[in-house]
Length: 388
Image 1 (cartoon, rainbow, N blue to C red):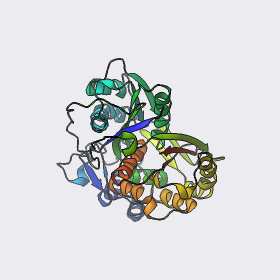
Image 2 (cartoon, one colour):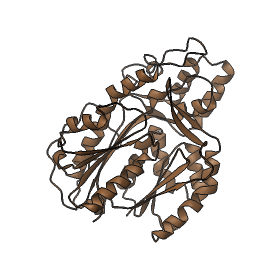
Image 3 (cartoon, helix red, strand yellow):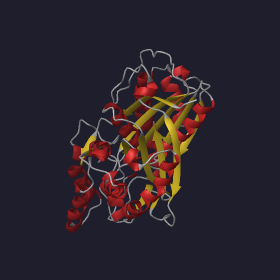
Image 4 (cartoon, rainbow, N blue to C red):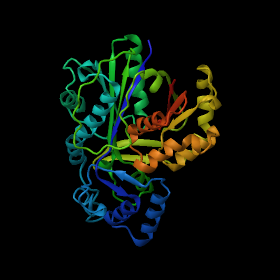
């Protein structure tokens, strides 16, 4: 029994900030010396991003003032901004609306009624509370109270693939299962003060967003009734008329994982007293350049494919250097990474929510299958999914 992708949905906050304004804000908030201003602006320019959304930005205010209510200018070098408790309280306030909006769109696109969802998989690495996001979504989406819940937590940018792996196993074992995967990341809640290069790079690329995917074990569905879409701005998602979900969107054919040897310190994500702290070693692009091809060629061969046989690539845009490294390692051309680069440019790195946005653009452009998803996260771990 196949695991059929029936619908995508995505939402981003109504408030966003340009990279130039964000660089000015970073320099001002951490009270950086003038020489550091130039370094910050140079790093932000190289990110391959035009603007990023944040739940902290009031779209009615000037962009440069958007973060100011939450992130005040540092009083001194010891001031690290809001506590982790304060940041996670804001996550609980903001995440459900963004997530439910994406999920509503995915449900509408899928043609399934909310009450037909049997399993809910929530994905996030940027906030936790209990009763949690899963309970909020069951309530806000009018899912059945018997919906079975699974949480994929703290796995980082590739976590949507981990969620698809669970959804695939559920649907392949029972054709009557309908799974809703919902990723929501509020990365802007973990902005880090200071002049540490890792923090500056993380501050420059991460953004807020939510994405949802509906996966079923059977072709036929129930026509959806009108679903209320909440007051959160939605971009880049077209609700499709699906006559045949398996032809229009695809089937999750396989997933895989590869742990890169001797790379545990290359990327980390840890809970600190003032938010979650990312370290992203400068050697990560080099590891991807040297290791990616040798990691995925045998996996593709096992599934009857070569790199040249893949028609659509959804490679997680951890940053422009990450995409450049993947392109070099796999010998891809610019067009093959255009969907990943366009999502990065338009929205930044929304962690686990990013790859579904790329899948949606492949679908919108009716790119021929098979598609391969690639994500990179702490480990250094490479996650792979094959969509046919």
